[in-house]
Length: 247
Ligand code: ADP
Ligand code: MG
Image (cartoon, rainbow, N blue to C red):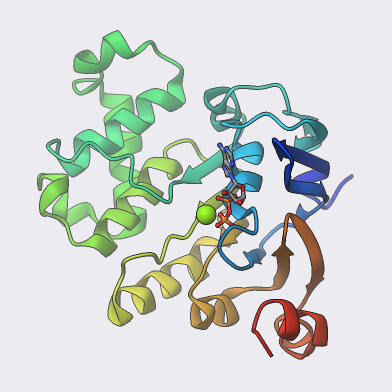
């Protein structure tokens, strides 16, 4: 049995002459938060895109729970257990919190989108959505329009939408982006508890959050993983300090 929930093997992707991913092999283990850090343009979002299926690698493969998912669509990967939140929010702002979560639950069920209005009256989908909202602490806000939520609450709602799929792994691209100090602190506490449900591959610029949360950190520079290790190992690695922390 594998102790790896999610893994890439030799992921490689070029944009013209630029190698945005160069032979990247990383894994995500049960219960952990594995942070991916690196300067702007290092290839973090490109890597996430290939893991989630919005970008096709030139070479290499992606496995979820030991299953090769490299050729699956983003929706198929989501149904296979990959929970994703986006660097840019994908929520429907004019819809309520509960509607957004129910929409997520419907996506998870694999029903065609034309049944969207019927989904709102579907008790099992609604129950699933409500359970997810309860889990992220938004149960009291379910009739609010998404547009009226704070930034941090929207992030929580995105996680709730992902939770309706009962994910085996989470992949998050800069969830702290745009949050103030207070919001980051709250989300940090929330992600800390979320890892018990499913491990998290976390791309994040907020180093306070990364150092507080990560079990392991991988450092990406020019499309290559130059180091993987614990917080202490990464903080004291001279190559990392030179390449990333600018020392
Ligand atoms: P990061 O998320 O670490 O900031 P990205 O993965 O967004 O980095 O980008 C990595 C590199 O690939 C950058 O040099 C970026 O300009 C380039 N890149 C990303 N997407 C594309 C694309 N669709 N076409 C061409 N170049 C791209
Ligand atoms: Mg990015």
